[in-house]
Length: 248
Image 1 (cartoon, helix red, strand yellow):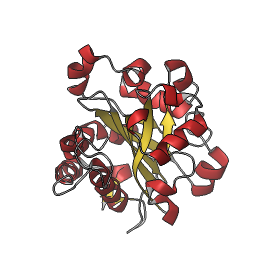
Image 2 (tube, one colour):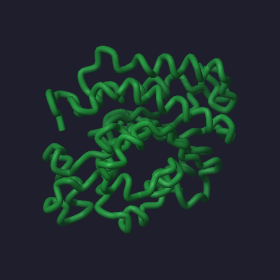
Image 3 (spheres, helix red, strand yellow):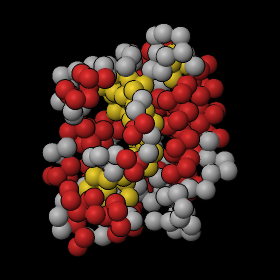
């Protein structure tokens, strides 16, 4: 296991090398994303020998509403009525999850985060964790809500900052303070990711029971490129497991 709170450069290099290879043999982005979150969940260690550092790790990707399956479309409509009239509306969609509870290990078991509509910058600004993730990555909210075709090449090559909350308790950017943060002892939150060629954003969010120092969080900028390498072959292919071709 790597020590998340004591993450070393040599460990980052080893972890990155493994992440880059996790897309090999996968049949969809969902499958590759599942391997990524499982690897991080199993290999980021806590303070005690054999202890996992993270309570929960999730992989999200923005996806046009019109290309979601019927179940996800229904979920999106339950959160934002009228979205069916705007099929290009981006939805921040859960692709993979790994965590301490059995129901945290399948995206289909998620109660409230299967897919989150992002219809406008104004609406996104009212969802603190999502808006802060975008801003801390170094993006404008509109870059995600309505990707500008002329900027896609530039954004696709950019190295993004991390989303980082050093102390999760009492922080307004981390929701469910009582039922999640306090109950499960969430100490720090770290998100990393980037932009795919089609303008969709991907983000891996780690909810840690151990403190993550700022200098260790910053090392995950490099790991975002490794994760991107693993999922990039599926950016214009099969996104969800069981789909072929466009898969979108």
